[in-house]
Every structure is written in C-alpha cells, then in structure tokens.
Length: 523
Image 1: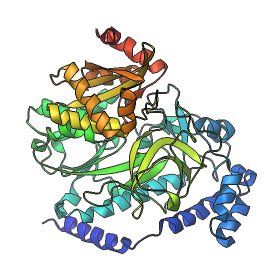
Image 2: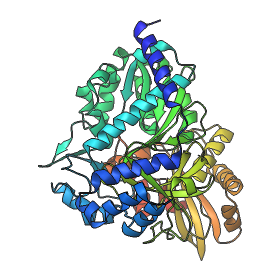
Image 3: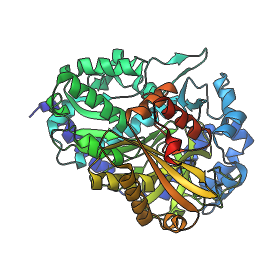
Image 4: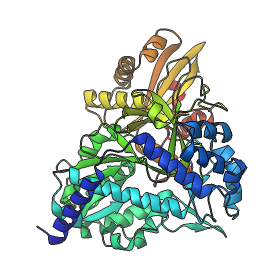
C-alpha cells in the first residue's frame, strides 16, 4: 500500500473525526451572520442599511431581534436589483461598495433561459471560502469505507470552464469553475488534471479533444463536473481508444463528484460506461458560493455549509411569495434555518462574503433532514410549470423520467418541457433527448401516469384544465447543438428543464431546421 496514500487517508480520518462534533444550525448561522455584517459594515451598502445597529442587536439583543431588524432594514434582491443598485459600481472598479476593497474577478453566470450574462462578484474572501469547503468535502471521504488508501495519490480530473479568463481593464471574468481552477493551491497541482495548459483552452470541443488525446497517460481516481459533459467526454474517450468502458483507460477511477443538475436522469446511461460501480458524491457549488455537499455515504441530501461566509434565508415557495411566472414579490415571507420544516419547498436567499445581500439565487430546495441541515435541490423558481394549478416541479420531472427510463429500458440524456395553450385550455409538450428506440405514444402515457402518481395537483388538473400531453423524441445531440448555437457549450451550462415564453418558439424553430416539426405533433 502506498505510503503517501496511507498517510493522507489517516490524516483525513483523524481530521474528520475532530469535525464530527454536533453543530447547532441556528447558532452557526448567527455567528456567520455577525462575521459577514462586521466585515461589510463600512461599505456603502453596510452604511446605508445600518449594519452597525444590526450587529449590536445580534450580539446583545434578545432572541431574533437582530433578524427582525435585518428584515426591516435590508430589502430582498434579485439579480437585476442587486446589479442595478450596487454591483454595476463594483464592476466599474469602485471599491467598498457591497464588500470591502475592489473585486478582481467576476463569474459570468447566464442560464440558458437568458441571453445576457450575469456578472457575479467573486472576492478573495469567497475564493478562500470555496477552497475551505472543498477541503472539508475531501475530509468526508474517510466515511466511505470502500475507498482504498492508494486512491488519494491518484489524479483529479476537473472538467470546467477555461482558466484563460478575459481581462476587462479592471477585472477578470469567466466561468466560476475557470476562476477557481486558476487559483488551485500549489500543493494540489500534482494531482490536478487536465493540467494548466489544457485548462486554459476556451474552445470546448478542442478541450475535449485534447483531454481525450492525453487520457491514456493519466491515472485518474476522481472526476468532478456536470453529468452531461462528463458523460460526453467518457463516450469520446471510449470511442477514441476502442475500448468497452472508461475503466479500461482509468482502472483506478472510483469517485464521481457531480453537481449542477439532478444526476438521476443520467445515471442509467452513465453506468453503462463503467467497468464496475463507483462512488457518487453530490455537491452544490453555485456562482454565488459553495452552498452544500454530501457528507456521508447513502445520504439522502446535501448538508448546508453553515459556517463559511454564507447566511441563508428561506422563502416558502408558494403563491403568496411568487407570481405564476416565478417572480418574487417585493416583501416575501422569509425564515431562518431553525424555522424551516422538512418536506416543504423553499426558494433560497443568500447573503455572502462576495457582497450579495438577501439575494435570490433562483434555486428551490427541500429539507430532507432538519437536524442535519440536509437539503435536496428541487428546481428553479422560474423552471416549474403551473399553467392551471398543476404545480409541476423539476424534481417531479426528474423522478418521472428516471422511473420511465427504467421501465422502458431506455437512456434519456436530456429533456425539456413547455407549457402551451391548447384549444381553449392548456397542455404540456415534452421534448425527450434519447438515442434509444422508443415509441413516443408509449413514452407519453408512461410519463403522464408517473406524474399523476408523484403529484396530486397534476392528477387533478389532468382531469380538468390540463387537457393533453405531447411528446417529441429527438436525438440527444440536438440539445447540445442548440446550446452551441447559443454560445453555451460546456462548462457549467445546462439546457433548461422548462421552456418558457420566447424560448419555446426559438427551440421549435431550431428543431424545424433539423428536420423535426414539433408543432405537427400537436395537430
């Protein structure tokens, strides 16, 4: 057994044992809250919203007096409000706006539903916080008893955006994955793949080609990335070397650390590329911060990072707090972590060490264990369907696709759903990306049946206003071609699970150019 691996594993086990002490979520969050406000109290934002007064209440006040004052003084923000009121000044090089100092890095974050890029500040404090959380996640590997000591000497393949960041006069910008990879600590460089040169490549297709060419020279134990792109890369490597599985190239591959989207719809196709089972670990790393990660084997959810530069608030995801289009109302109900309930859906507000304050990141979550602060991501505030009260979440969609794929023995690589007007009422149109042979009518009926089981509101509306379901089966490559046409190929980009407004016409126009008339399915 390798000496270095043994020492690393023993060190990880001992360090993790020290960290196993039980944490009080409310106290940990109050401590994180005080640190954030104390650091930002002299910024323009902190002075305008009386951070000194709020800190005093947090330290000397009664119960949650500090939080009530925070709610009263500081408004909630979506991206447009945060940028227009504050971050545009930060982007222009002004210092001490929402966080001390000037911001050198900005993560470009634009979901496939929006054309314009969002500029999310990434401060030095945030970069260090992300590194600390990454190390904490590595420390939890000691709980996975099936991982041998020699694994800790193997390579980490991290598939993300280019580290060749764009310089805009007073700041650098790029994908968060590119920013963090460009700042990897020196001690980790010997394990990091694809290495600095390939990591700088901006052309996604060329980057995959270069990784494929080098793949046989690496001894990879860990892979980190978005499931769709990792699967595409592994298929490319397998085809290039004319082997049966990825383990024929990387025999020591044992861990896949994934995030960004639910892994379940991809799992069946992913496992076909493996020579033996591996360990899957889920993470929740957004452009706004490292929010949560899976801390033990077979965990149902991911544990929130409570004490590392993030303060969470939770908005019940209901009609009182959000419009039918997923827009947050001006003064929603907000809760601290000790007031949430298991099984209910919440939209997430963040205050961070990058200078985001009461900021709606757009994700919805559900607590599966309040005691352990474990959550699952259920979707996006704007990526759900409720045309007539069916309240269909991305979580429902993912589960239905997973179950139907298993029943029919097919591999669904991508999917998306559009809510449309139909006759005098409504319908859903599903676009299923698969290269497996499947009957669209049978697929339609199975998806519909599963959703009725998973969602009572959906079942009710299928008898009333939701009059029909349509399914168009398309090659999975079409989803990636559309993203490429939008300049969103690779990195952290994902195809939207729900198509709304102008995206429906745009997608159907694209399909028509590929020889598929989606509208004909509905006639």
